[in-house]
Image 1 (cartoon, rainbow, N blue to C red):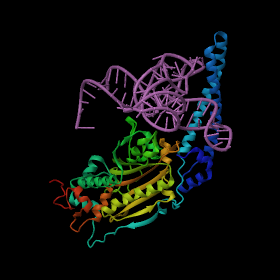
Image 2: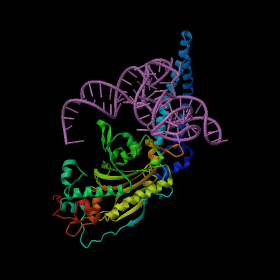
Image 3: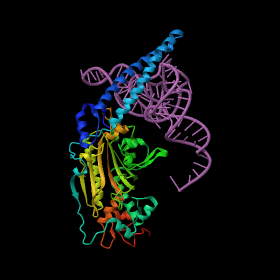
Image 4: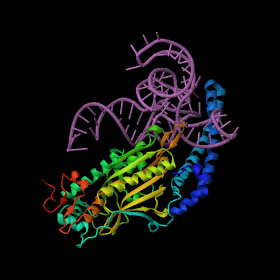
Length: 428
RNA sequence: GGAGAGGUGGCAGAGUGGUCGAUUGCACCGGCUUGCUAAGCCGGCGUACCGUUUUCGCGGUACCGAGGGUUCGAAUCCCUCCCUCUCCGCCA
């Protein structure tokens, strides 16, 4: 959410920012309504002031004088109520319009209408050259019997999977490795609720707008989170933190749920687009400082790159263009891992928001200047599984269909250096 | 699921219709004082919005879990919801 004062002061910049991102906003109506809001508010407050004073007077009066005063103030009371109703309507619409205005992208973000405008920044790692016909992860996994798709469909429908044996072990290994990696870099691990109320989703700017992608539990007014970014970022919502405690670095481990509505028919094969997965997410809550935010952004991106490098997975870093940025994002780097069967596939997404989310969730801190400021928030994937397993299986496959386990994962795999038909059950 | 208790400022904890944004204690900040053990005294100490101001600031309104209602006037009375705690039941 943008500050209404900022919107008023930088109207044209806000207008252009929305245009660049491809958002439709009615700024003129917002300003007009806000003007109206101030007029109504001023009148209401003036009357309340009178009412307060009269109230004190009435308390001291008796008899006719008292009745007269009460009668007189009844009219004022009615007027205040009417104003209150009008004000509520206006404020509701102001907030609706205001919360729909996107954060302008940072000036260095490439201009573009959609993902076609994204810019590749660099490629890291060697794309493997096979001297045999490589298989895709579905074939590899099914041959080893470490993922079961048909039975998953039987139980849970399309876009689901069952990790089995060494597949399940690998999933846990990758998650734990990534968690340890970011914990080593100062992140506090958290396991958070995956069923949350509306507010955290509004605060992180998934709602309104993301309802179609979100599983809902209407009976209990809860929603299944698509990422632990939601509960972790909102962890301190409605709080005033101390500047000395910032930045806060948290990593959330959670199962993630996504309806993938509108994606029917896309990526239906395999582990790429699925309704349920696991993720370790980096979240940083920082003070309100653009330079510092940029430093944190680089930091969380670097952490993700280190994790992919350690697992010997080639990847590229993409600078996401204006048209492909979300409403609150100032800048976003996507990291795409090399998946021989499909090419580059997004495995990480590093976003910075400045105070966009913190305004929506009332996440603030008291600065050393004694004043209260909105925090800056950032997040990036540390690891998302099983999508990243696609890259591991396909990049590290051997001609006989076995999988080489990258060295850093071996300790997390109980010492296994490979997955073969012999050890794929996972059982000892 | 059943029965009960409760949600007040960073924390603790008063306050049952007007002078309560709210006693007091602790914590915290500033100053003073003191040769003594987590000392004493004085002062300050919430947030948001509106207005005003060159800055410090000043004026106003709102906020006692959330929303609604009664009333000239609500922390206080009524309704709905949310949350927490205790006991019972159920349960990984």
